[in-house]
Image 1 (cartoon, rainbow, N blue to C red):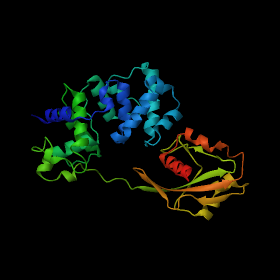
Image 2: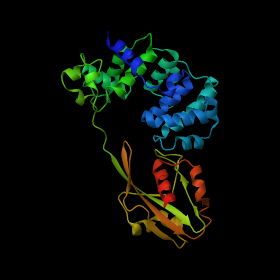
Image 3: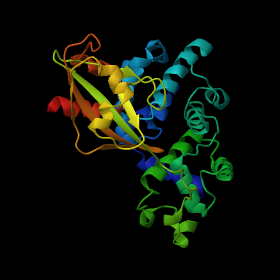
Image 4: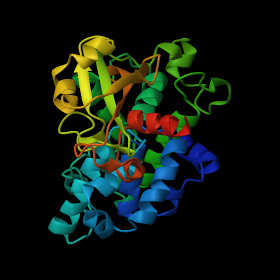
Length: 346
């Protein structure tokens, strides 16, 4: 029995009962694939149910405001996925009359959709023989065939795609693609793979040579950038505050408290002396207190954000008109959401 047949047989006996596997609706498959990018299945499941309940069709998603979509996405991270999802929904309605594109080539044109997602949708929904290559697939192929080409190099991306396409069973491309991804997620795991019970263990190159812990290979990551955020949390005497809409960066169009970004950690006297602080509070008698004595460190793939939340108590002012109870209506980064939950409980 060959590699592909073994994987498919294993999958049919061991596959998880996941909601997106009970449908061939390309809209719902697309939703699941976008949600599961950079997200664990157990975390993504709740968001899948929320999105399919709020936006049961692509028309519902297209009609929503971006703010509504971002609010529903809140806590999932990588918010460009949500913005691209919304943009593409409107494109599907406008350019395809609400009918999801039916070929790999057309699916690939959707904003936020790359080779992997287009291949998954095309194979699962339309039986198009296009092989998926995600992190799980890289790992399975690198280990089984003993491939040391870095998976994040131009050469590696091409080499693994060609190999995946060669191994694909064209008669059942959707099933095969799901099989190899499931196998990587549950059997050939990043840490502690289940080699003893693996149905491929008698022909796996990396197991035979005891090198499976070294595979797959990745080129060295870029240096992590450190950033220092100081949020000004206004608390007026009549329980009002202020938030702003971000105009750039990874959290674009999400809301936050007024932000002072510094090149290093700052103390209260440096905060008060900052131009933005003076601009916001120059005519007010304020008191400032640090909420978190230990900086909150929010880690992203390419940067670490060291954060302080400064509570600024002020008199009533027309500058600050948002009722505290209304903040929950706005989409915010998880960093802000975590603070709000802690602040409310104090």
